[in-house]
Image (cartoon, rainbow, N blue to C red):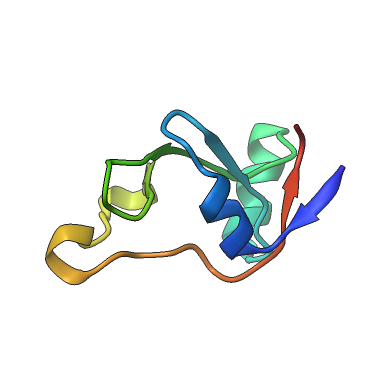
Length: 85
């Protein structure tokens, strides 16, 4: 398994790709503990032609992220991603 930078991962992203996250916050650890899962968040990529990749994901607590179209593209925090292909 090799590591990718965020920019490399974004460049390789295609519609339908699943992004898997493992955070370090108390909430992230609680999710992993309560679900007995190795990850705490997942998202599916949508890559419309001519636009940067968008990440479709769920939010806890009924909160939703601002629309990328209205407020500019949002990116996940800068961290290394593991490539499994």
